[in-house]
Image (cartoon, rainbow, N blue to C red; front, side, top):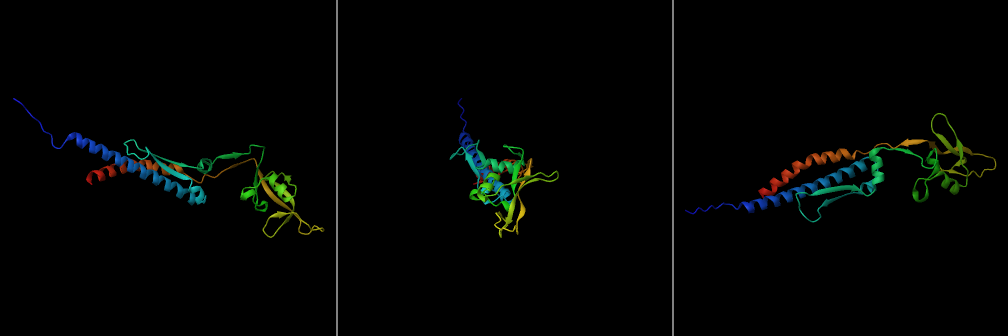
Length: 210
Protein backbone atom coordinates (compact mmCIF):
# COMPACT_ATOMS: atom_id res chain seq x y z
CA UNK A 1 0.00 0.00 0.00
CA UNK A 2 1.33 3.46 -0.91
CA UNK A 3 0.27 6.60 0.88
CA UNK A 4 0.75 10.12 -0.45
CA UNK A 5 0.28 13.24 1.61
CA UNK A 6 -0.22 16.61 -0.05
CA UNK A 7 -0.14 19.72 2.15
CA UNK A 8 -1.93 22.73 0.74
CA UNK A 9 -0.82 25.47 0.97
CA UNK A 10 2.96 24.93 0.90
CA UNK A 11 4.23 25.24 4.50
CA UNK A 12 7.75 26.15 3.40
CA UNK A 13 6.44 28.95 1.22
CA UNK A 14 4.16 30.14 4.02
CA UNK A 15 7.03 30.26 6.52
CA UNK A 16 9.21 32.09 4.04
CA UNK A 17 6.50 34.68 3.45
CA UNK A 18 5.95 35.04 7.20
CA UNK A 19 9.65 35.65 7.81
CA UNK A 20 9.74 38.30 5.09
CA UNK A 21 6.66 39.95 6.58
CA UNK A 22 8.39 39.95 9.95
CA UNK A 23 11.56 41.47 8.52
CA UNK A 24 9.56 44.25 6.89
CA UNK A 25 7.55 44.85 10.07
CA UNK A 26 10.60 45.04 12.35
CA UNK A 27 12.55 47.23 9.93
CA UNK A 28 9.63 49.61 9.38
CA UNK A 29 8.80 49.92 13.08
CA UNK A 30 12.46 50.44 13.98
CA UNK A 31 12.88 53.15 11.37
CA UNK A 32 9.72 54.89 12.58
CA UNK A 33 10.93 54.67 16.18
CA UNK A 34 14.26 56.25 15.27
CA UNK A 35 12.58 59.11 13.42
CA UNK A 36 10.10 59.62 16.28
CA UNK A 37 12.91 59.85 18.84
CA UNK A 38 14.91 62.21 16.63
CA UNK A 39 11.89 64.49 16.30
CA UNK A 40 11.20 64.36 20.05
CA UNK A 41 14.79 65.22 20.98
CA UNK A 42 14.88 68.09 18.51
CA UNK A 43 11.63 69.42 19.95
CA UNK A 44 13.07 69.22 23.48
CA UNK A 45 16.15 71.20 22.46
CA UNK A 46 14.22 73.98 20.73
CA UNK A 47 11.64 74.01 23.53
CA UNK A 48 14.44 74.56 26.05
CA UNK A 49 15.54 77.62 24.09
CA UNK A 50 18.79 76.05 22.86
CA UNK A 51 18.13 76.89 19.22
CA UNK A 52 17.49 75.19 15.90
CA UNK A 53 21.18 74.83 15.14
CA UNK A 54 21.79 72.56 18.12
CA UNK A 55 18.52 70.72 17.45
CA UNK A 56 19.67 69.88 13.92
CA UNK A 57 22.69 68.05 15.33
CA UNK A 58 20.33 65.23 16.32
CA UNK A 59 20.51 62.51 13.66
CA UNK A 60 19.10 59.02 13.19
CA UNK A 61 20.26 56.03 11.17
CA UNK A 62 19.00 52.48 10.70
CA UNK A 63 20.96 49.25 10.58
CA UNK A 64 21.52 47.14 8.58
CA UNK A 65 21.57 49.76 5.85
CA UNK A 66 19.45 49.07 2.78
CA UNK A 67 18.32 45.69 4.07
CA UNK A 68 15.31 44.43 5.99
CA UNK A 69 16.04 42.28 9.00
CA UNK A 70 14.46 40.77 12.11
CA UNK A 71 17.45 42.24 13.96
CA UNK A 72 17.00 45.78 12.66
CA UNK A 73 18.19 48.59 14.96
CA UNK A 74 18.04 52.38 14.96
CA UNK A 75 20.71 54.73 16.28
CA UNK A 76 19.84 58.27 17.36
CA UNK A 77 22.73 60.54 18.29
CA UNK A 78 23.96 64.14 18.34
CA UNK A 79 26.83 65.60 16.37
CA UNK A 80 27.43 67.89 19.36
CA UNK A 81 27.39 65.28 22.16
CA UNK A 82 29.31 67.37 24.71
CA UNK A 83 26.90 70.31 24.54
CA UNK A 84 23.73 68.22 24.40
CA UNK A 85 25.02 65.88 27.10
CA UNK A 86 25.82 68.81 29.40
CA UNK A 87 22.29 70.20 29.14
CA UNK A 88 20.91 66.70 29.69
CA UNK A 89 23.02 65.96 32.78
CA UNK A 90 23.28 69.39 34.44
CA UNK A 91 26.94 68.94 35.45
CA UNK A 92 28.95 70.85 38.05
CA UNK A 93 31.55 72.98 36.25
CA UNK A 94 34.83 74.01 37.88
CA UNK A 95 37.72 76.03 36.52
CA UNK A 96 40.59 74.00 35.06
CA UNK A 97 43.13 76.83 35.22
CA UNK A 98 42.52 78.27 38.69
CA UNK A 99 40.18 78.81 41.58
CA UNK A 100 37.58 80.93 39.78
CA UNK A 101 35.22 80.80 36.86
CA UNK A 102 34.86 84.16 35.12
CA UNK A 103 31.30 84.82 33.96
CA UNK A 104 31.05 87.96 31.79
CA UNK A 105 28.42 90.58 32.56
CA UNK A 106 26.57 92.54 29.87
CA UNK A 107 29.18 95.29 30.21
CA UNK A 108 31.90 92.86 29.07
CA UNK A 109 30.49 92.41 25.57
CA UNK A 110 31.17 89.48 23.32
CA UNK A 111 34.41 87.76 22.52
CA UNK A 112 36.07 86.94 19.22
CA UNK A 113 33.49 85.86 16.60
CA UNK A 114 30.68 86.43 19.06
CA UNK A 115 31.83 83.88 21.62
CA UNK A 116 32.20 84.29 25.38
CA UNK A 117 34.96 86.73 26.19
CA UNK A 118 37.72 85.92 28.70
CA UNK A 119 39.36 88.36 31.15
CA UNK A 120 42.66 88.26 29.24
CA UNK A 121 40.96 88.95 25.92
CA UNK A 122 38.88 91.73 27.48
CA UNK A 123 41.95 93.54 28.82
CA UNK A 124 43.75 93.22 25.49
CA UNK A 125 40.80 94.51 23.44
CA UNK A 126 39.63 97.27 25.80
CA UNK A 127 43.03 98.53 26.89
CA UNK A 128 42.06 98.54 30.57
CA UNK A 129 43.19 96.58 33.58
CA UNK A 130 40.81 94.45 35.60
CA UNK A 131 40.81 94.61 39.39
CA UNK A 132 39.72 91.75 41.62
CA UNK A 133 37.14 92.57 44.31
CA UNK A 134 36.53 89.85 46.86
CA UNK A 135 33.07 89.59 48.43
CA UNK A 136 32.18 87.32 51.31
CA UNK A 137 28.55 87.03 50.22
CA UNK A 138 27.66 86.62 46.57
CA UNK A 139 30.11 86.26 43.71
CA UNK A 140 33.39 88.17 43.74
CA UNK A 141 34.08 90.56 40.88
CA UNK A 142 36.58 91.67 38.27
CA UNK A 143 35.97 95.38 37.78
CA UNK A 144 37.38 98.14 35.59
CA UNK A 145 37.57 101.90 36.05
CA UNK A 146 35.88 103.40 33.01
CA UNK A 147 32.46 104.34 31.74
CA UNK A 148 29.49 102.73 30.03
CA UNK A 149 28.84 103.70 26.42
CA UNK A 150 25.42 103.96 24.79
CA UNK A 151 25.37 100.18 24.20
CA UNK A 152 26.01 99.43 27.85
CA UNK A 153 29.61 98.29 27.29
CA UNK A 154 32.53 99.29 29.50
CA UNK A 155 35.03 101.52 27.68
CA UNK A 156 37.94 103.78 28.57
CA UNK A 157 36.91 107.12 30.00
CA UNK A 158 38.50 110.02 28.07
CA UNK A 159 37.22 112.66 30.45
CA UNK A 160 40.00 114.73 32.07
CA UNK A 161 37.69 115.73 34.90
CA UNK A 162 36.60 112.20 35.66
CA UNK A 163 32.99 112.94 34.75
CA UNK A 164 31.04 109.78 33.99
CA UNK A 165 33.85 107.60 35.26
CA UNK A 166 32.74 104.70 37.42
CA UNK A 167 33.70 101.25 38.65
CA UNK A 168 32.10 98.77 36.27
CA UNK A 169 31.69 95.06 37.13
CA UNK A 170 32.99 93.16 34.09
CA UNK A 171 33.09 89.55 35.32
CA UNK A 172 31.41 87.63 38.11
CA UNK A 173 33.90 85.30 39.79
CA UNK A 174 32.58 82.04 41.22
CA UNK A 175 34.43 78.88 42.33
CA UNK A 176 31.98 76.62 40.52
CA UNK A 177 28.62 76.65 38.79
CA UNK A 178 26.05 73.97 38.12
CA UNK A 179 24.66 74.00 34.62
CA UNK A 180 20.86 73.71 34.88
CA UNK A 181 19.40 70.47 33.56
CA UNK A 182 17.29 71.59 30.61
CA UNK A 183 16.77 68.28 28.80
CA UNK A 184 15.48 64.81 29.67
CA UNK A 185 16.49 62.68 26.71
CA UNK A 186 16.06 59.38 28.58
CA UNK A 187 12.35 60.12 29.08
CA UNK A 188 11.65 60.26 25.34
CA UNK A 189 13.90 57.27 24.65
CA UNK A 190 11.96 55.17 27.19
CA UNK A 191 8.62 56.13 25.64
CA UNK A 192 9.75 55.20 22.15
CA UNK A 193 11.26 51.91 23.36
CA UNK A 194 8.06 50.97 25.21
CA UNK A 195 5.98 51.63 22.09
CA UNK A 196 8.24 49.63 19.76
CA UNK A 197 6.83 46.09 20.35
CA UNK A 198 3.28 47.25 19.63
CA UNK A 199 4.46 49.04 16.49
CA UNK A 200 6.16 45.85 15.25
CA UNK A 201 3.00 43.81 15.77
CA UNK A 202 0.84 46.45 14.07
CA UNK A 203 3.14 46.57 11.05
CA UNK A 204 3.33 42.76 10.92
CA UNK A 205 -0.47 42.38 10.88
CA UNK A 206 -0.74 45.14 8.28
CA UNK A 207 1.80 43.41 6.03
CA UNK A 208 -0.03 40.09 6.29
CA UNK A 209 -3.41 41.61 5.46
CA UNK A 210 -2.15 43.37 2.30
